[in-house]
Length: 434
Ligand code: DLL
Image (cartoon, rainbow, N blue to C red):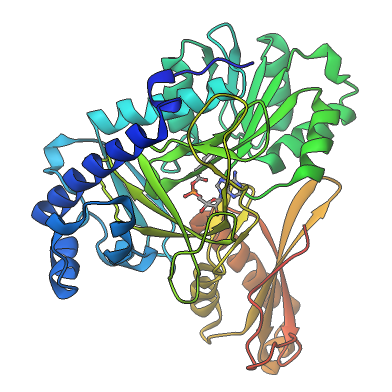
């Protein structure tokens, strides 16, 4: 049985935990009402009397917060503390390419580290481990978030980041005797592929545990990664707006992800009506932060499809478990750990072509590597251009996607009306064949 990092909160009797959630929710509501104009306005508009939110189910009376609300308040309008109290800023993709800025106070960072340490411990990581963090260290929360948590638990942290050079990653793993790998599942796949090419048997490495997240993956992928890297693979979930990784993670049972409920209240709602659904029913995951100082969010619609699992977990934790996230309610897709809205690509295409072309993104897995192709419908006259001009257009689009979105894509120009449409005449923006 793996160690429980913060037994006080992870094994708290449910009635006490719920009481704690209510108290923390009330204080959060008071703070956002006082300090965040957006919440004052929507609470007033909806005639919300925060004093009347007394039971956990009362949360349903509160309005939801969406990604668009956050985008509109870019950069600092949703921060609930003076900027001098912010010690860190991360960011995430908004719907149309305009980002969302996320602020953390010193306390937020301490809480976040604790949440991550719990998730690592639940997978069996201890202070004796060498933890290689192959997530990007930048405005994305993966690298820094996991780093602080792993360091907090006392592990030896190797911040290798998600470098394009997979062989270097493997050399580090070999030389430093890495025992725990943290990355996206697709990157773990790439590592496995390179290992084979380099003729290194996984037993020449010291890997025991892998924690993978930031994009959807299932049991088939778990099996493939475990076989290829000879480790035990665990799912970790998080959202930049909710600090980052650390919202939930699997324990030794590998049957659902335990939510850090002393920091987050989770609900599942019907994505069409917004009405809460019963435990066990699939719907959209909605999260409320209840300890966050810098960037508290009330009923944030994550766009992720999940469900709440019923019943106690044999691991001893009393916290609710969520089903792994396999799909989203919107067009956001995750490619090599990067969140991308098709609209971001649309903006680039508009600029590059001078028209507003129809396009379709397709994602495939080719021999373990995820690859992206963007098909763009261009007007016929463009095909009459010299080859040189066409090449320049394609290269320009690819370079902009690389620079602005951070992803490599193959660009294919197609004639108008060749992309298939769904009912309603809309081109399906993303075809995910992974
Ligand atoms: O991906 C935070 C993170 C970093 C999680 C490292 C785990 C490990 P964002 O970039 O904001 O944050 O992306 C959040 O990614 O809404 C899901 O759609 C998807 N996602 C994250 N974890 C998982 C997972 C980080 N374990 C979005 N399974 C979320 C499926 C996941 N999807």
